[in-house]
Image 1: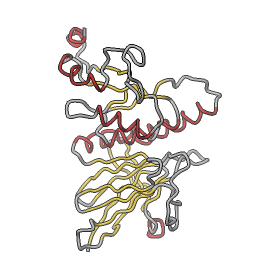
Image 2: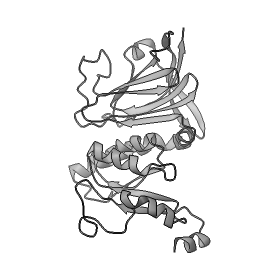
Image 3: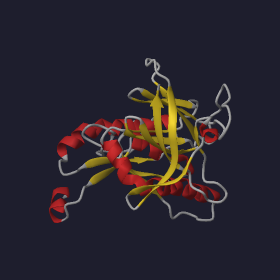
Image 4: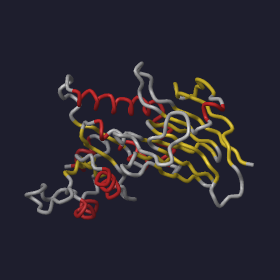
Length: 280
């Protein structure tokens, strides 16, 4: 059927997989039998050449379970693709994790729920800010991911710091730090674990950074004897295929790392920064 459909309409086709969740043991009882679950994945890839990729139908808020599933389905023969996930505020940060794993899409389900419920309003705000932030520069993000120049993370409960490596540079990410000032010796993380951050390397010493509820600091690799510093930090937006600088950040604004908040009371979006670093 898939092959016949593609002859009529040459579009990419995927399967939306009802997963074999943690603790679910019996196919046909705990989950539908015959689906593209992880234990049947290899067979599905071999037997369905007209299916371009296998998607995941993820309904969990558990960080370890969510990221485990993405890792199982992000393979050389299959991109990470969240074809369905719960419409909750808690699932919004996982879009960044999916992008960091080379993912090609993230689709929330049930956005037409009760618009008057607090949970629905929170979910709408959390996912809308993701898409509004990333949509204007989606081609930049896609190309950087394809080239292996993009890393992105979602906040992991109990792990308020992460380090990303880009050649001779390290990017230290902190969750729960203040928007300005020294971070506490023991970072608390965000109460709702809503932190997420994306870094795309634009050049050897140039980065595009955006995210929410997070701080990022750039350092030279510890094995390198050079000192690193910020040379220029611009707040930018991508409009009609071109970068437009909105303002240049001064030293007081970058003394305590580059800090990303959330949507504020005025509805202002989190920012996008273009960062140039140097060493001596």
